[in-house]
Image (tube, rainbow, N blue to C red; front, side, top):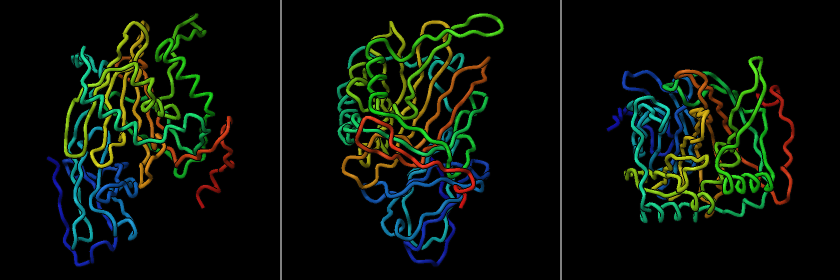
Length: 344
């Protein structure tokens, strides 16, 4: 279990929530996702800074009953908010990432042949929490991104600017086109390209870590996969999904369903293709559902990776700043945000 160290103080409850997150050795952990929760809803989300510190303001603190702390490669913890403390130090234990089919020598989990009805019901409950009318809407967001070549052990959030100055968006036809392609031919398409050494073959993949993250609540996704309960904990259920048809490009991986509101917390997957097999995969963290009755199934951050050579991977990390959703067949307009304006 994760350890929680307390620093006593005399400040009143709900004046502010402040904390510091460290690893097993006491070193500060940056970029930890920290969520403040009421009894039933996520109230706000922030991240730790370079010193592992975070804070929530008084309005959030007045309603918060617990926190949820997560970072890739560490065990998530959900401590309660306690009175009489000016600051708490949270210790997160390392939990090395093992991604199916990427780490050499690790035996892949066996996908169940029969459908697990409990897992299917949990996935359906999660999809029912979302407003799937987004299939007919345009979406757009500001974002910050970074690309790096990293060893498998260092896959995770990369340093990015804040706030982001880049943009990303899609029209409903774009996502519908990907959904049709996935249903007909699978989760990858073969690409041919030229290099100084001649022609080579690669794969193109759907942006499940970005605007196509909506796919994880789409009936098409449920139609193409079987589900099983991998793990049940106090904060939710870990569902494993496996392809029904492995004769074409497919994905397999994990979905985390929150026990608090049955929304999706995150999804992680690897791609399976014919040779050349690129060891590609991704991860998406879904946006804070908040108090809305039926939130949009959109991401807060996403990662995509593929193998370069040996155990080195090319990773693209994107952090989204909230999505603009509007009716129509086009991408919503966002004003250009230059780097000077963004820092003011």
